[in-house]
Length: 114
Image 1: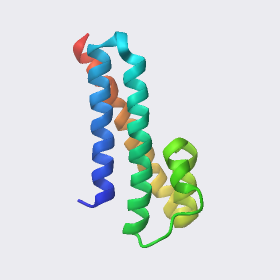
Image 2: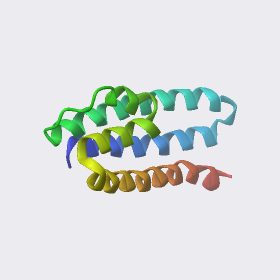
Image 3: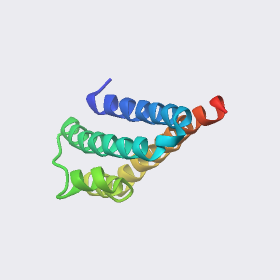
């Protein structure tokens, strides 16, 4: 498994952990959400750097920061600028499916615990 895919696995596990903690401790849901947002920012920054280095490219100007703080804008910007329209669209579609799976993993503990 490549390093960037390991970051994505940790990303998925962070959604699972956040979902479990928020389901168990609903009174501190805001603090857990804030901590999870910071974890996501670090993971997205690291993913952008590693993904670019694995493909032997230099990320476009500002892509790493946009991926960290505005992922819905940063990830498409990085993918389209780095891989073009066809490959960027394919990678973006796979990323969207991954995001949907992440949200499902996040929501599962709420249904399992209640």
